[in-house]
Amino acid sequence: MDWYNSLNGLQPAFFYCAVIGGVIFAIKFTLMLIGADADVDFDLETGDADGGMMWISTFSLAAFFMMFGLGGLTASMQFKLGSALALTAAVLTGIMMILILQLVRKKVAGLHSSGTSDINNAIGVEGSVYLTIPAEGQGKVQLVVQGTQKVMAAISENGDEIKTGEIVTVKGVVNNILKVTKH
Image 1: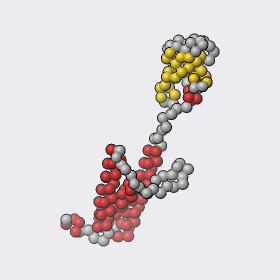
Image 2: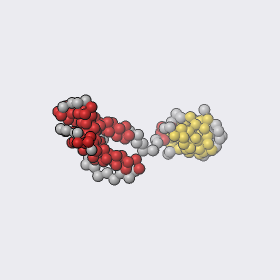
Image 3: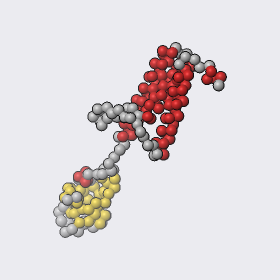
Image 4: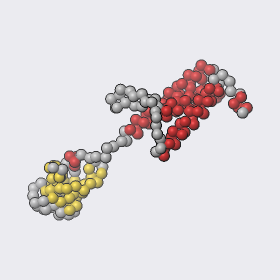
């Protein structure tokens, strides 16, 4: 209690911002980690070509106030800056935290993948015959397309039978069936 009573000027305000913002930030972060975050944020979207970014949310506001308080306390208590400079340092620290959060959100959003692959990306890829491809019919080949190993239906491009285990190259796609030739 002596420490709190020794605060003067803007220091009590910085302290309350750090504590309240920190508690809300910790709760929101914990809820996000366990997947139970029911967000009722008010979001301000920018008109960026990348689909916009969420700038104002309860999470980002909590982070801002947490760092605003910590930055202000550090500037005034550790560096012995006056109120005006401590307030400036607090605002800059809070804004820096929001920018860091936006960078992290953008990087995480870039990790999103639809999980679908385009069969045309198999053209030119080598694979092995999984089930024999008869001269007049289809079999299956095993190959890696877009970083994922797949087993896909295939026919022989030149009408030859291709036995299991033989290496083939995909030459084209017809009705979602690969046309292959022996390597």
